[in-house]
Image (cartoon, rainbow, N blue to C red; front, side, top):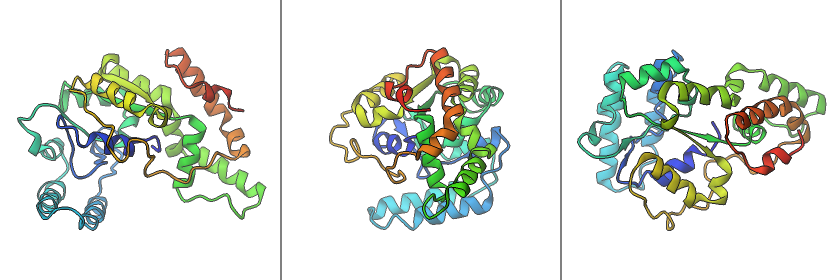
Length: 274
C-alpha cells in the first residue's frame, strides 16, 4: 500500500503479454485466502459505479467492452475461484500473464500462497515494491484522511500512536514477514522485490527487470507519459520529525531484516535520522 503500484500498473498495462482487467485492485485473493471479506456486494457495486463514471473520454467500443465486463463478469455471480478466473476470460489462449495489482495480496500468509498456487495457477509470480518504511507510513497516514495541521503537538502524537498501533496499518509495514510468506509459498525464484526509489531514479531499468523476471519481451517505455511522473500519490511532503521518531522502531526492524535477507536498500534509507 502506497508504494507505487499505480505507477507500475500504468506502465505495464500496454504490454501485449500482460493482461489486465478493467478493475485494477480486485482484492479477491485477500478476500479468499485471508478471509478478510473485502469484496462485499456494496464494494463491488461501488467500484463498478466509480469506474464506469470515468470512461466517457474513451472510444465507444472500449466503453462498451468495459461496461460488459463489469456487468457480465465482475458483478455477475457469487464469489468463487471460478468467478475470479472468469474475470480473465478474454486472455484465454493468449501468451503471457494475467495481472492482479491488489496490494492486499501482499498480506497473504505462506499457506495461503501455497493454496493459491494450487487453486489458480502453478505459474504464479509475485512482485513486492519496497518503500522507505517511514515515508510509506506517512503517505498512508495522509491518504487515510489524517491531518497534522492546526492540531496541538500533544494531540498529534496521540493520533500518531493510534495510527501506528492499528493492526491493519502495522501489517502493511511488516515487509520482511510478508516477503518470507510469499517466498515460502511460491518459492524464492518466483518473487521479486523492487525499490520504490527506482521508480524515480531509474524507471526504465526497473521496468526491464520486471520484464526479465516475467520472461516476456522487453518493451520501449521511453515515450510513456507516466515514465518520469509519480501518479496517484499524496502530497510530496517529508514526514515530520515527531512522526519519524515514532516510526523509528519499525524502520530499524525492517531495515535490519532486509539486510539479513540480502536485500540492499538505498543508502539514504539508512542515513535518515531514526
